[in-house]
Image (cartoon, rainbow, N blue to C red; front, top):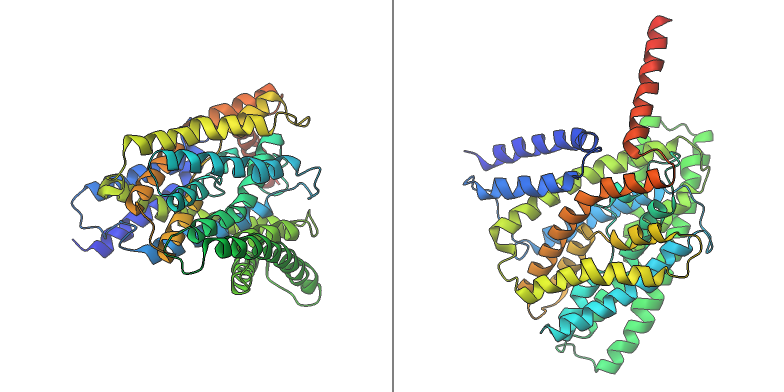
Length: 434
């Protein structure tokens, strides 16, 4: 059988699943990423001659495919946040990023070092796994632009996922700076890390993201008043925002992830109720799901092809420590004095630290830059952590969010979808009668 044709059939089935599975699984304790990892495991388990899914054989492909998926997801994440930015209204996601993520990286680094990882490898693994994921966290994030599903939990997790995928990058560079093979003295490397990787790259990302959002908002919303742009083209505008912002920021040595999210949030604040926001978000959402399908199938294939072969009981313990202890306990402590968030909301926010595609990118990026000790063990621990997170958080997301909605007297996502479908059906019946 031709492998090319098998891949075509597989992708066709997978894309059909993208269209139907989110709606089919909306009422059940199951997320579609679980399905696609399982599909990848099944396909690679069968003797079909599929191309290798080992990240060590295709480091560039893994890096750039996960990179593209993350930046598209960050654009979609920024476009669907209705809440205007201010230090007061964004206090909770900022605490999660600037306090909880740093504490998580520190705690995980110490735990990894005590369990035998080299210092640089421990920092790299911690930096890769600390950020929550904007790609796989759709079930606990806000709804589409203007839908109004923006309670404290969904907004906090969405804002955190958008911000921390850029702000974790300095710690990846710290891991690179700690490698013993580096030529410069350690003190010089740390000083360079402080002013370049923390200060300059972050400030550049914030400024370039804001500037890009302002300029592109003018082109999108003001220019069409004089030069007509077809509505069908606004999905491509969203992609242009993503690629242009990311490329320019990276060329100027800023953090492209952070800049893309800031640009999307800035763009969203311009004519906030304009219908083009929905069109741009819909396009990025579809493209994101397509990329997710490919990556999750390959992840499932990598798992059955030996990705977890270097996993030890110490690695299992590290993963469970992160998911079940460091993130939940750290989150509760970080938000303990927050008056805007109830204890129930703090518990949900603290628990749903979903790990995913961003973690894959960070590890692939660093391992492509330099040689780290225990590289295969790092991939095994990361793969196991992502697998556990996808299954655990994906299974609990729907029932927990439904419980929280009912606790606050709100309709669940499924009930809102059913109500919208009934309204659309009624409108269609009325049009037919006329």
